[in-house]
Length: 353
Length: 205
Ligand SMILES: [Zn+2]
Image 1 (spheres, rainbow over the protein chains, first blue to last red):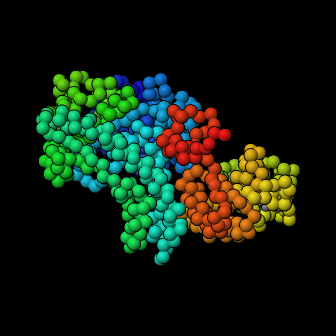
Image 2 (spheres, rainbow over the protein chains, first blue to last red; image 1 turned 90 degrees about the vertical axis):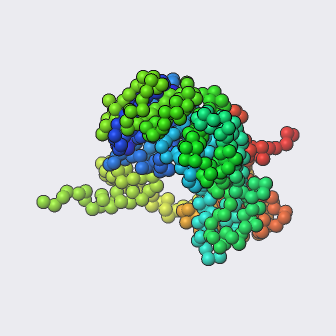
Image 3 (cartoon, rainbow over the protein chains, first blue to last red; image 1 turned 180 degrees about the horizontal axis):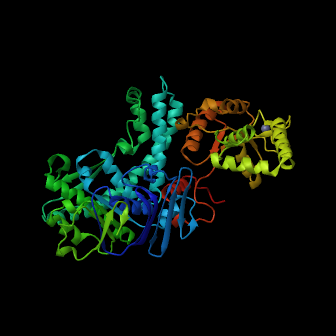
């Protein structure tokens, strides 16, 4: 667990030192006062990425050249400095050559937010991000392969758009890279979904309180027969010339969510969909606990205020007891005896009291 | 009242320094002021050295490494293995290979790598010169020693096709082995590194 969190020039915080405790901590306050930024900073410290933006430069406090986040994770001190030209990652004061060794010494994170319903209802992109965020925490090479795939994909798409007659000898130099990294992504995602399935099924039954409400997952790969992306792209060359973009590969994969064997986005009720969104995140935390034998930090943004007591109590009964929970909320009306007496901090105008 | 600025020659010096790689506005100003404070005793030989390097060192038209006037120490040196050619991105990549003592063949510098995102294509690199050298038929093996990132690997893939065309079936095209670093344990290697180390496995002699 995080025993302290320190922010410097991060979003609305010029500077903040925050001692943290195990169990539940509530960050309470009106909107736009900085509650979510505290959770975001914990995520950027532990996983070097934000669930709210893909560009860390957006996190820099207005007018400052860069930001720093630091904190103590058990006995380990983590520090992440970000600036326009430098990124420094330190573990116990020792500079790390790259994100790999830093992340290996860091902790696990599950991010839950009020917009998780989009995981069920919206496009596949959000579901791929859900899998990517999880896979990167379970497999040390996943993040590297994902970044390489993404860069090769962007390069390939530039080449497909650039010339009136595509230069295939250049494009295929990237096709081979896409196939290599893509295979890694597809294989690891597919295996992850298989390991996740029992946990999501269990979580759905538990939160809905209905033994017959099954949630099943299926991984739909878009790399063609045998996941042979190079062969698929070769066969679909005409389509690529027409559309001027890469038409197959893991960037088009999807995670299919089935409630009682039917696609959840179309056939599940709103209540069922809300349960699915929670179940996916709860399952993530159970999977981390099972496979890594470590409890993730749960970062829960603006979820509890909207949750009915039934789902809230079910969630609290099933989340890993050992997990530290940092929770933001705009009101405390929901707080009842089942919650115990969590620590409460008031966040207002970039200050915490 | 006019705002006080540095005299124009100093501003010009700072502007030149800012063009150097890795030097921002503040560093340029610091270095410029520092140079001037050291005075002509330091600056005159410094400037002469820059000028001398500029006029006496040129690019070798064969391998792309640096040479003085007309002599390239690599291309014209004796005792090299004439059947081996190693392709690198930058002249600076040659020295570590030389110092390793593990390679005695010839070199070819591309002066960059293919990167559509930075608008660098094959025509911006010394690839035509490479095909020409290979077509002469002296080399039996070309070793691609490019960086292990996306652009380096895409460039290696692209060159492999070009070299097959230029060198025919008898030319061996190889790349540096990628895998577990010396002294590194398997438990700290990620999946991609392990996959590549497996692909590049070698026979125990
Ligand atoms: Zn030469």
